[in-house]
Length: 417
Image (cartoon, rainbow, N blue to C red; front, side, top):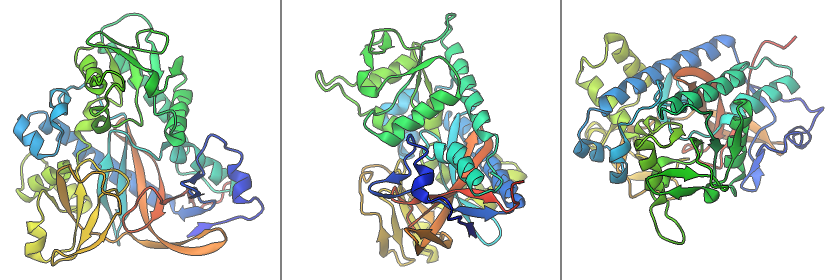
């Protein structure tokens, strides 16, 4: 399954990359080994990713036509309703990540993170460095360059929507104290090759209804917010005045006084309830999907509902997850009887609408850490860049993958010449 070369130690290797978080939460995060696959499997993963992306993208068009009551039932926070139907770029999301599980003969979608996906620098940059060191072909070769161009194009496409003529003032932002978030944003800023600046979130200022300003008081035209989710943004308040600065920022986007990337349309697909809509349309044999699309839903999607009753009626094991949860937080696994058998210890997202999804086992793999052999469950994180399949790689953890999981790089079995 994997290749490990001992000439270079893990610490020596990752020590070359001081702006990468090879350790997280006081433990090893990035493994210094490769999960090796055939090039045919890499092509299959990308084909599935593209098809799944097509289904989600098609759903966005339908979601924009829904009334407010239906959107609330799907878990969207009330504060976001005035902004859900704004579309500023051709792609619904510039960078999104689909989480897949490998089954006996295909792949199943657990969810999509279309708004603020993590795992970017790992797959687009570090994966290639590990492959180079361990002398294997990188299945994500050239994806970093494509990502940089896509970010650059998205910034200009978003800016055009404002109707301005001058060169934009481009700012990348994140919480400054979060090393992973900050370095992800700085990485994207670097590879897009544009004259842009990093300004941490706490230094941004809002002139209500007028403009977003940087720390020098200059008007920001494009804000790149890769790691700041909309459901967190709407809760953001000024520490001194109590003003709802997050909502003020969204209002600037609505007024076309600010462009944001990922665009607001990315948030529209973030709700896991979208998968319940997809499954419902499929069960109804809706003509909204073509015959081919119905086949994709049947093969790649898991049954998902807004209540557990279909699983209780059929005696099927299922998972409860919040519409806007992250990193496995608040996820619970139930036996066919409805008895809870496993849950994530965190409950940060219990106030959101819950969805109920068919349970699927994540495949078990063995891996080495601290020279010890361990067992873990494997999930595939696979990216869509401008709705085209891109870099992918693996996370290993518990059955409920959380933020204490490991990054397992991927390489092709063919030796690099």
